[in-house]
Length: 131
Image 1 (cartoon, helix red, strand yellow):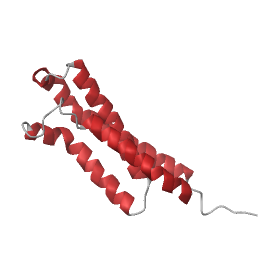
Image 2 (cartoon, one colour; image 1 turned 180 degrees about the vertical axis):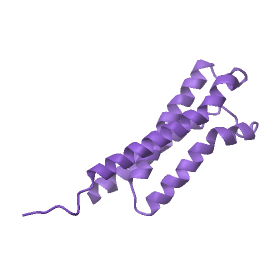
Image 3 (cartoon, rainbow, N blue to C red; image 1 turned 30 degrees about the horizontal axis):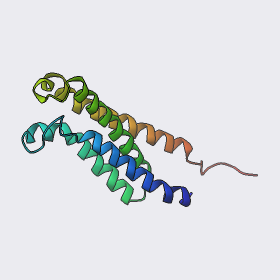
């Protein structure tokens, strides 16, 4: 199990970097020019990143995997919004910027709940009688 965890950490890191590249696209919102909109847009990502990192440092692996899955789904939605409006931020605000935080929170909650359920069901029972 340690070998799988050892080799999956670089894969997880690369997947998180790909998801971050998808999420933090300059065509969606400029962090320097529109800092208030960017703060609302990226608040769920930062919040769940902190939770995933703290739990990973405590020895729990599943929150980091769940965060990476949620990050990737959020990034795909951001790229959909950018593609739908051809990267023109002036036309994005009514649809894209309002629904992006809602989609992000939903994606992170579903991925965290799914990873938690899988981890909980895969855990061996301590109270079983073995003969």
